[in-house]
Image 1 (cartoon, one colour):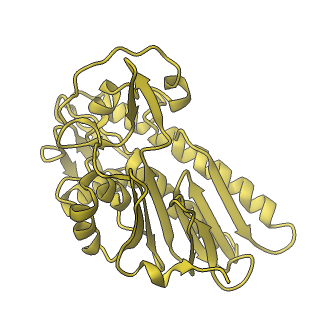
Image 2 (image 1 turned 30 degrees about the vertical axis):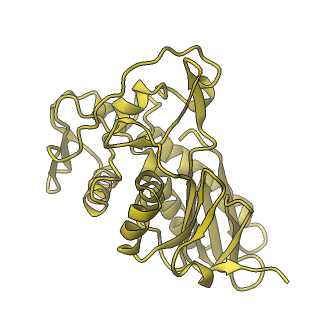
Image 3 (image 1 turned 180 degrees about the vertical axis):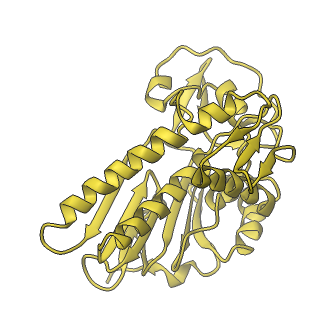
Length: 294
């Protein structure tokens, strides 16, 4: 999935390493199925279908449906149909292969939106209209973290934390104390404490590359088809119990502080946002999770 994965397992002697190996195997299996960078993945097969119906396994169908639901719930700010725009911006392969390449500028690609995608839940069938292609990266990593963490508890772990490149899910008993403590990418650094919840971060400062000497990043504004130019550089969202709203952190970053905060409030999620000028804004409810030293 083009990122590092960290897994923490709390279990009895001899079980933790075994459960960690199982978690790694599950992550690699999901990547093989849902990555846009793997030509044989179920997502790549769907994108290549050119308007023909594709039967998908139940969990992959559910992920596609979840991405479309997130688009509906965020007034279109989270949009899984940004793939062509992302590739036009230069992100057409794994990030480590994009950095350092000589890339010529291409005009932004319009983001079609998922309105016309056909879903048949009874058959598990998806039809992408011609010219519509999905990128599930904005939702797939967090969903995978949810699945792997819950799977670890089902297998007997007392506690589990799975961090998929900034999409983090914690469940059960932490290794020390009674809360999971997570460092955010806010500036200055901020730590949050959660019991069984989620933390997710989006930033324009890390997955970057250059096209004709112009800096680019991977967060596409669905209204322009180009990398976001909002007032925010980094957004971390937090929910103390359960998973975070799907695509919530991208929504705030893409929409900007004012609109994004209003959208975030609908989902019962809070967070912290850092603007390009370094201004840090703690959203309503964030103080309940912030861990202060001293």
